[in-house]
Amino acid sequence: MISSDNALLVIDMQQGLFRGPASPHCAEAVLSNICLLIAKARQVQVPVFFARHTGPDDSPFSEQSPLTQLIPEMNVNAERDIVFIKKYPNCFRDTDLQLQLCQRGVKQLVIAGMKTEFCVDTTCRAASELEFRTVLISDAHTTMDNDHLSANEIIEHHNVTLAGPFVSLSTAAGWSF
Image 1 (cartoon, rainbow, N blue to C red):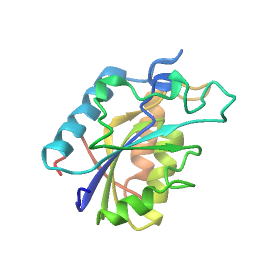
Image 2: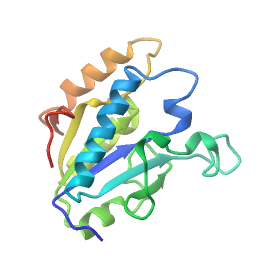
Image 3: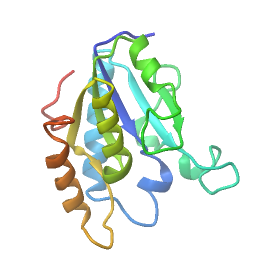
Image 4: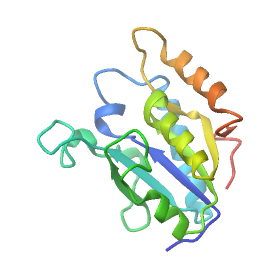
């Protein structure tokens, strides 16, 4: 088990969201930034956690569904990376994420992934409440337009709203573990 003050958490970068009917905002740039973070983490042996959001067994988002499989561009390796299933927007709810982080001595959690206004937002707030120093990578999380706001507006709003009380912000290029 790798021990580190830092960990990288990549949230819900899975087929049904990233490659779904609506394309995420700046999809390829965000994916490139997430891959950069993964490479930086692996280079200095920082643990990388991947969350998969699943639904009931009889739904299109069951654990076995192709829609919940992580996208292959991230080169997830089950022998070195930690992949876990979640059923709620909060990556800590009903998972062993907090235990896994504590066992590794993690004090600072770096967060990237999907979707900004749901799982990324909720997990940033929860991590802060659990007293992890939390870093949101401002150019490595994304979402889609909704009926009221563009994806870009949602992302910008969350970067501003979360910064300070819940997270520190960094860019993928500017971050080093």
